Image 1 (spheres, helix red, strand yellow):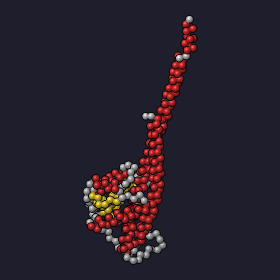
Image 2 (cartoon, one colour; image 1 turned 45 degrees about the vertical axis):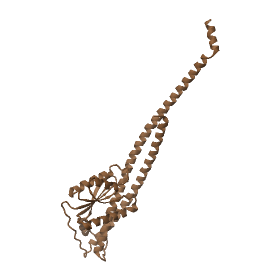
Image 3 (cartoon, helix red, strand yellow; image 1 turned 30 degrees about the horizontal axis):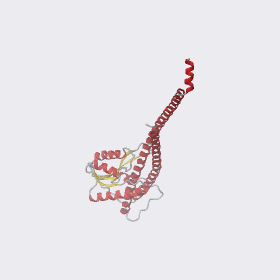
Length: 310
């Protein structure tokens, strides 16, 4: 490789490193935003839980959970993936996890799947899963609630037409200080044991909550808020994990690029030194050749040779 070609390659690699560093920084900033949003969603979830508790403390409200089919229940599965690149096995891991979890209780072939992410939708279709809808990933905190609402509308449409026993959501989650992993959570029916426990728990306040108006309407509104929070949390957690994966990949890429640059710079210095040495040898050789040529063409030197022979 010539010096010019190697120098061009070094420059291109250095430009690539700048791009990788920028992407790593953007992912790092995004992680902070999504983790802050997760914290806010967790706090709002606690508020919704307290509202449920207040409603269940009311003696006039009665709740009878619908019995769920225990053997091979009809399932709707929401699988959340990524539409962006540089995330390695992100989509494959969550898809594999979801299929394995569904297979433990339900029939994978008949389970209706709602995919959030076009790539995860294509993977589900390739795996011969029954895809009912696919929604794009929104890389904006402002759009997460709208995606959650669209998914809830689709769930309501499916549940209205068919008898669905349960709704599950699968996404990638990373807890601080731990490696990320795919997780699953039951969205519907509501966790009956948790609701009963809320009724028995001591109310954190001086007076019991006062419930006015239509209690069933309030219960329906709380269910909608509960489902929205769970879905929004799953979407946000998936986006945070996606950016974490990209940041780690960019860190590794940055390290590899630095090692390549170090090797290429060393090769460039060696090649440059060799080129300089060759040029010096050529100059010295040329000077010696010119010196010999001038000496052989000097008539006085030929005369001196003749005199010495006599």
